[in-house]
Length: 379
Image 1 (spheres, rainbow, N blue to C red):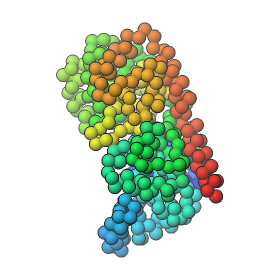
Image 2 (cartoon, rainbow, N blue to C red):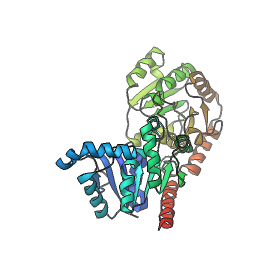
Image 3 (tube, helix red, strand yellow):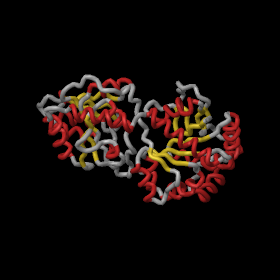
């Protein structure tokens, strides 16, 4: 089934879940509708760049068209004029049979045109689009207007669907399907005793400073080492903090690394740390891919009661959970893990969870089956 994947930026190395859909859904019979093209297309797919320069006529139409669309639907981002005609022609030339918009905010752009063309349209909510985005009443209104145009909705966690529902945004054909992980590539290796790993952007939502202070409190002077993988605005702050806390020799900051190097770290790490919190602007996780990868590699996961994380990490079984911002509790749990004489049961439980719930091949098949069944019923 020829699928158009709609996304904001293409190609983004860290968006493994989107790239996987582009490469593999329905046997890879796909094309890409992108807001922006980043100049790198390793998947070699037909591409339409939505934010290409407007024609003179569209530049003249823009103030009225965008204002009218915003008043009518809640968003001014809908294609119009010559740009809309070009996109319609491209979708027809590609013989697209279904549209899958990655992130609800991208579905706002394409749902109306898909409906006009008689194309089934689905969207996938993943985090920011069902948390921070809902702080704008205009976005909530746009989502409510969009939902009847969609044939189905996917979400990486039940938490995000509940968050949408709390704002009056619902769909009768909604499914929880996590992004998943390649459990054949992400597998446990020989674990280094006392090894801890944190992966992700060094930003407020990940609270790396909380992770660092908690590790310093629990592990200072013990046989333990923490590696941070990722860059971001809090990186330099955390580097300075490690020295101030007296754990500079127990903490390594690698910066951003290629995905294969991240996987290599996960295979040999005992404990994965992610102190996710709700940012001041309301932004939350969905269900972090890094946690799913860590579980697949048999990492005991210490995280927070946040967003969809408890849907993956079962406290006391395959990991441990604390409340958001509970730095003391986080430090205590690090100590608990270090004091465990045998960590193998949690390691096995972590791997078993990933195999049972996060095998991306199984999850991709589920998405395909939902789309097939929905399209068949529609016909």
